[in-house]
Amino acid sequence: MTKDLNKIGRTVSRRGFIAAAAGVVVLPKLAAAQSAVEALINTPGRGKWDEQFDAVTSSAQASVSSNQPILSPNAPMNIMQAMAEYQRINGNGGWPEVHPNVPLQFGVYDPSVRQLRQRLIVSGDLPQEAGVSDSYDSYVQGAVKRFQARHGLAQTGYIDEYTLKALNVSAAVRLAQLETNLARVEDLGSDLGQRYVLVNIPAAYAEAVENDVVALRNVAIVGRPSRPTPLLNSKIFEIIFNPPWTVPRSIIQKDIMPLMREDPNYLVDNKIRLYDNKGQEVDPLTVDWNAETAPNLTFRQDPGPNSAMASTKINFHNKHAVYMHDTPSQSLFNDMLRFESSGCVRIENVRDLDVWLLKNTPGWNRQKIEETIHAGISTPVDLADPVPNHFVYITAWSTKDGIVQFRDDIYNLDGAPELALQTTTGIE
Image 1 (cartoon, helix red, strand yellow):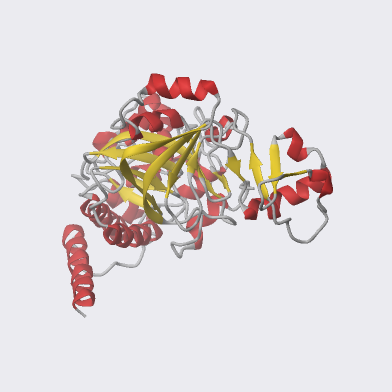
Image 2 (tube, rainbow, N blue to C red):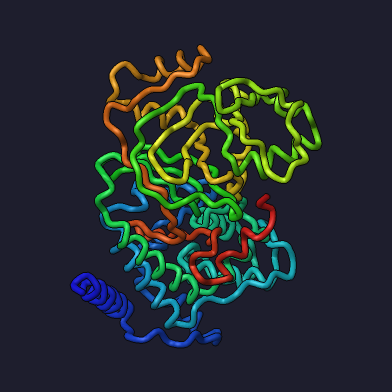
């Protein structure tokens, strides 16, 4: 009962903060009137969002990136401040939708650019001083890159399909998304450890955090919607260099069985060996690959740079049998939609993370790690101090600089269909 009362009190105080900061008590209905948008654009003292703008388009990412972790001690307060701003935006009529008449890119002159400028001014991506006109100039290009960076999109500077869909998610939906994620952040708490690794699944990246500062931020590949990466809290206790790969049962059934029907040499070509329950190797030609269920055998891939885990496997206890690892398919890290795994998490530049994890383990500096990987022998290493590891699902957050970030709701957990639009195609 006490816990429930505390939760109710927390909700009331949160809403009170938002209402006080926004100057309203109840969220007004969205007004489509142009005058409301213009009133918001011309509002003095819009906070520090505009001050983050840099007309040099190449600096868009720098103006958005931060060494603050997603789950900093101030994360709840930062989100509440963002919610107050979005409450105010909604109270002034939200932002206009953008409906291009032509492809919107640098150099274009078209009335639909005016809609785009108004949209970007309201969200703080374009400074008011840039004005409202039909010209897609360098200021608009820089503002689009900044918007794309805040939404985890490719920073092209032009309006592609994904950017247009993100632009046209209403301010009311974004406000609700912030509130949903505030509850998640509060439930996670701030006691994550002095040193910890956090994988934010919707953002598809990993943070190595030390003393509330991001020491590393690595691009990641996480589970596709049909095979999602689980939420978990654990501790990293071991790194295996040049790991053999024991193929999960689900992959054997869903992937290897069909592949073997098409290409009987698939296992041999990929150096995957079969073993029975006595540890005896089994010839793949003796297996019925047309059977409905996979054989009761262990499938193990030899270590090597072309194996599924390449140089590194990072182990932590969990009931889902997932782990973090390297991959030979480095080009996948360049994809915008990095939701392609079967539940485990692939880490770009994983050797940097190896060095950070092992920095308190005697004898394991970068040179030793590189020498071990080059030798090609499977080598498990226990961490001297296990590092907490958290897989979380945060689709909206903010920093103390007032930079609000949004990501697609790839697993449809936020409850708004608009937030999942951008990842409905091109995943598999």
